[in-house]
Image 1 (spheres, one colour):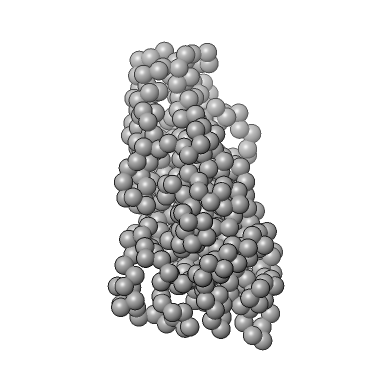
Image 2 (cartoon, rainbow, N blue to C red):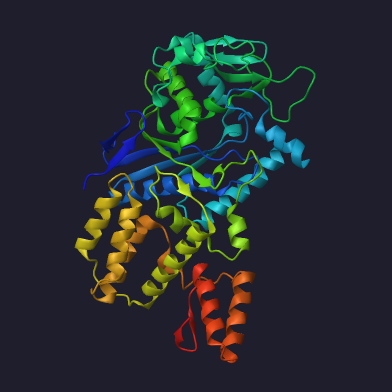
Length: 452
């Protein structure tokens, strides 16, 4: 049952062996806190949480580092446009610093609602400006930089294999380029340090050897991952949209500075899609976790939904899919809550579950094993003890579900009241209909000694 993970660098499934036995360094690209995270963003963090849980289930101690981008991420990955934090400030009328604090707090709230394990370390870009400047100094000393009117850039022509992660063909990119590059020598070159525009005052800017300005997006992750995990660590994660630009540029910086790509494995989660395409903030059409909560949906219903599709496959989001996830989680919770404590773990079922999650986090197949267990003829206490071990990976917090003292959402309270009224009126058809609505939303329980 050796753990195998799909490595984007090699485009292959590889057996995972920690660089230091029993100790894993894991770096995950965190949020850019200029707005709320949408459900597509959160799907990536759920996948990374599952990875960490599987690593721990395999006996590893994980040093998990997540960055918070609160400066340097421009509105275009091609180093065009303005800093997203400054743009957010203009949109809301708040300072860029206040926006960073507000949306960081909102993100952390979503993180905890989804029962994601707390990282070993959160690190903010604005708190590591010195480390980023030092990293750029090294790149400059090694001849990998050049200066333009608007900033200091990384010269990708210095690397024969630039863009290998994304299988980029640099010659083809140059020949087919139809974008304005300004003073950039080629489209693939990217900003290390951007100068503050003349005649304007930025809210987030710092002195540097090259002038007043702010760091580029890619340098923050290179500097912080090297500081906290070293120049060569086990796993680097992110969304599939990071492959072509952000992670390719991190690798370029790492190879230029340290002589090696930063991580041994590169893992990428795929998009959450809507009817019209991938979910994105850019068109203003995105769903937040709070949107689901306002509809009476338990956040862990969304977590369960994410378990039903492999992280390297696109997940189509729909009300029907969310409803099915709510029904499944409700049934799983109800079964677990009825089972007594004190049983032994069933080794055969747990080994089958582990074999599936160890095949590149194949949670859909692992869930099939879970449901086989639930429907099995094993003693109920044994089923509960086994499911407890499985939930260390699933992260559905089954053991604390009944103990929760959180107030019911308004929508759930209203449905419960309507159902009680229907039962008093002996309108059993309506009562059953309302029960199904509650189950669809992931809420089950007891009334008058009978199942809800």
